[in-house]
Image (cartoon, rainbow, N blue to C red; front, side, top):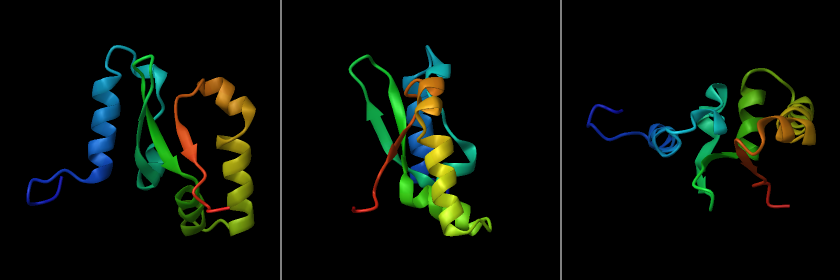
Length: 101
């Protein structure tokens, strides 16, 4: 929260995800190291509220941590977008492809 008492966007998103999934908190995945890539939420018909991350921002954050861009793209694709990870987390987060392609 900033000094004026206004909650930052990322804090609001995390709070919404936690509150709206309070009965089943393990059904969603808030990725701490990617807080700055949070765009918003997706409210599903089953009542689950899922955090939505920016693909571009995930790559930018990895690059800011010293990973070259090509390796960052491969890492996000293989780790967070792979079918294996999506099956493992069973839709616990969404990554939006905001590349404009």
